[in-house]
Image (cartoon, rainbow, N blue to C red; front, side):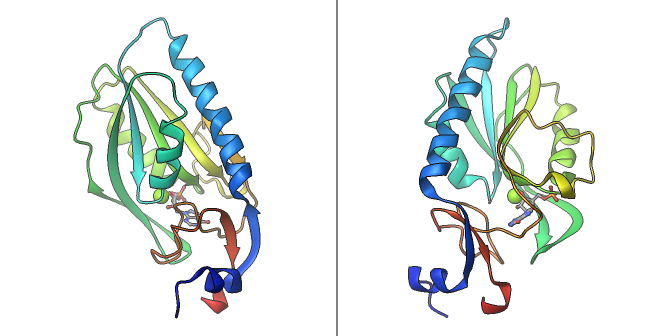
Length: 188
Ligand code: IMP
Ligand code: MG
């Protein structure tokens, strides 16, 4: 199987979000997030946490649109095998930084059932951060199981379709596609 753009065109059923639309929305999110933290009464340190691996493209673009001093850290969890949620969240890599008394902003590629983010929040809350907020690029509201998960900043609500590109994978591939598309899984 080749990994060329031609191949991606072949398996792409539908481009869901193109590059320009992603860029525009991420600019807006960056402005909203900057305004929010600038207006906090307590000017505590901000740590933005990339939930690996899917969040790496989004956080790279978003971080450069945030006008507030910040620290970047990474956490690796795994909950998916193929296209179905196992409901099994494994911590593979923990944060390097202490988050005690700091503002934490979790950066996700997508919130689907909400199990992953809710599990991460439970762990991080025990470390007494000043606050924990969630920013996700994509959100599938129809699929939510963890109803209490409150998304603070959301790029796009999308329908219940499996999507890849811009950090999101299918069996670890297609993360480098610069837009979000719906793959034809039988052609992969
Ligand atoms: P949740 O725990 O069900 O909310 O799933 C969250 C994680 O599942 C995300 O961080 C993604 O890594 C993965 N995921 C959920 N939906 C998709 C999708 O449509 N494409 C690729 N990965 C997905
Ligand atoms: Mg993920």
